[in-house]
Image 1 (cartoon, helix red, strand yellow):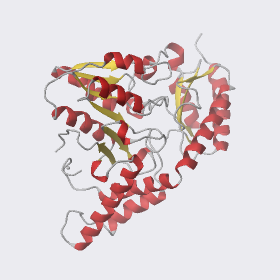
Image 2 (cartoon, one colour; image 1 turned 90 degrees about the vertical axis):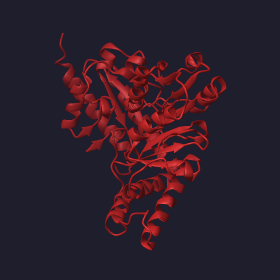
Image 3 (cartoon, one colour; image 1 turned 120 degrees about the horizontal axis):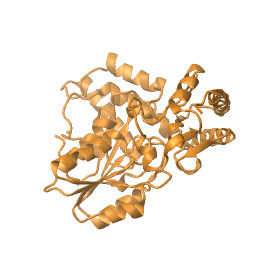
Length: 375
């Protein structure tokens, strides 16, 4: 099996699964309880919080544990707006993940002026265009760190500076799901940052939201911003994954980029294969989007599946939706190029040999399927 759909989800590390199991079976105590065993569990949770904060160059008290990125994005956007007085402009990147995009867009029904920040042909937010959209009454700007379909990396620091210069009271929300640990980031460049453990080899059903100190936020616990029993197994599983990444950070990033460049080079040698998004060396190290002209992406996906090569045609959250791809359309990728698009997403445990084998199978299947193209 060659698994190239790591932006949808990743294999849970053995260490992460073991940690989660330990806190489900032997150290299962509720960290809010009064006895000493529970206090030890609470210490473990707080140590995990501190490690996660370190990874973001943040403070432990700025980390709120959640059930994953969808909750984190919803909590950040809704919590920020509930804490503000008056309505105004909301700006959302045109290529945001649905868990942020749809939430922001829905506020138009509540009287907010919702506008989209356009992207360039690589999928990155056009900073000049964004700057023209900023008004004094801008309340929130939501722009992802790394695009989940094409791997474009946004200049979050420049976006943050531009927003604060034009609208000092506005908050900046960053969906960091595809960027956390894979692309350098500093929490000073946003007010909210969402992440999800299963995107970096942690368990599913757990994530976190960074909330900058001083930012008004109506959420209801990190420290009183989220109610409910602490998901200790999930948190400790995520902590094991964070610890592993931090121990191998540059090694993992360099290896993923080497694999991506190898794959891109191999695929570029196939007739009528085009790369969508940034040049491979300039995007995130783990995401490559290509179009195989003359073959529908969904058809190629299933042909590759039969050969045990697993890829996607886009976001897992949009996999069953019909019609045009919103992200590629915003980039100006249309027609046969959009129809033939595939996303191949890597992890630190893929190999160069897999990149060669996958490309060879794609070339073989492309040649075969093109024979049956409708004329």
